[in-house]
Amino acid sequence: MYRERLVATEARTESARQLQQLLLDYHDFRHLKAEHPLLESAIHVADWQAERLKATHEDLYQHPGYHHGLEFLLTDLYAPAGMTRRDDNIDRVFPKMVKWLPDNLLDTFAGLVELNLITQRLDLELAELFHQQGVPAHSITAEDYCAAYRESRLLDQREKQISLVADVGQQLDRYVRNRTLGWLLSMTRGPAEMADLSDLHSFLHRGYSAFRKMDDVELLIDRLVSREQQVMRNILDGRPDPFSLPDNL
Image 1: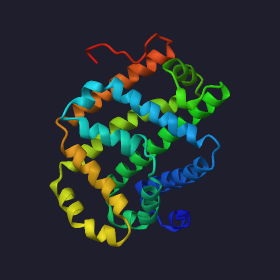
Image 2 (image 1 turned 120 degrees about the vertical axis):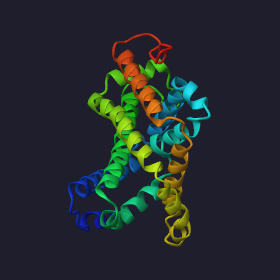
Image 3 (image 1 turned 90 degrees about the vertical axis):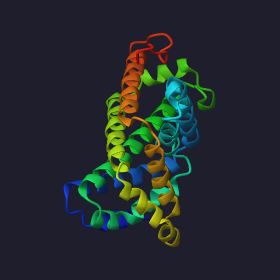
């Protein structure tokens, strides 16, 4: 619906052009995915992986200093079911974003969009691999998952996915330490509702609140990244119980 607005907007900086292209790519992918015959299977894959991530990082997920941040990552960023309206609104406000936001904030948005796009592409590829192997997506086992994972043609994207988690997490942490952002989010709730942008505003406010409550975002990101890199190595090496990690990770 808003693709024409994305295309017609003049992007004057490299950051704006990068965000514009990523939003176009994500817009087109969302429409492809919505019409894909394995859409429901991809949703099951996303749900399975979200639960796997909770189990792998259970100590962090149960920690009061990290729980809200991880919950936001898994529900709003990793498995964004029902976020079509939010994503449409990001496309809708893109002309204002490139007009008013500084390049460093546009770069952060671009990282979020790219992370979301890569994650959903990987989920859809796994759904296709499960289908080819005759594995029902609603009853995936760890063995099924690892076998399909090793058949992926997008392993470079899996590595990039992990690095993006680190980059985006660190950038978000810098922004939420600025109290002005919290004040602006509070002040703009009413105007957002009047402009029919309440879902996008709620997403931003949840992210801000979640990261503000975290004890040490850098420590959390370091642990998430090192653990997921080890999980990836375990799967590719065919190790048994690849999601069990050493206590020092």
